[in-house]
Image (tube, rainbow, N blue to C red; front, top):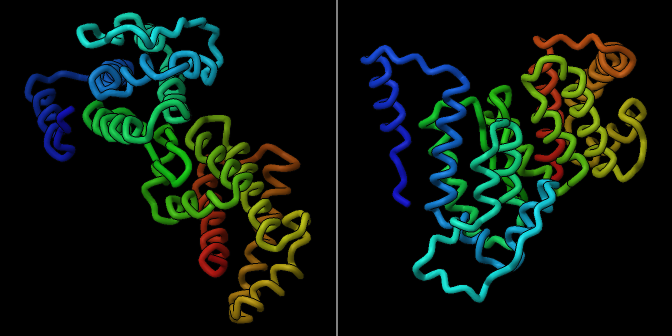
Length: 286
């Protein structure tokens, strides 16, 4: 499939809409995005792979938790037949009207072991182009172990602080999952406490791994001090690290853990602060 020029096509479309005074609302953007992704699915190879590989269709529906019995028909000659014509997965995607379900179903394709990596890589590049051209508030991040989709609030993924941590945390699965869960809720009204809770949990789990104990975040002062000293971190930085972490713990206890008073304006600060703690620990550890 021919790749569009990222810096050219979106601008041309934007200018066209401006000349003709065409206003595109969010629902239309998402509909356009869906249609473009379906084209990428149909013509980029991954749709045919789902339809043709052994158990591909059944694997897809199993991951998204939708009951749909399919019949394997690998002995059929597809040379002169569109494999998507009888593909339940393709028809399911076409009929979806809920944006979150559609994105989850697309996400599921990257979790399928029956689909080879080249098909996934090509599809991912197409989706990145589809996002840019459609102008939808969606971010895609590829880590060493996963492909992650996030809503607009995850603009933080553009920052090295968060991006690098996602890559490095792949060595610590539980901490990685909590960090990922926090980002997935970022920007959603009413989910501020969940974001802050998951950030704290991710940091706590990371420290448990690095320090090889099961202590809570609040009880790690002595272990953190000994560890930083062993990594030849200066006394000043070590002291500063714990003092800020102590304030971090107090905020967590007062505003999140024992209450629900996290304001939306404070969430981004907590994410970056958590990321700073993690980046420092991971860079002196790796």
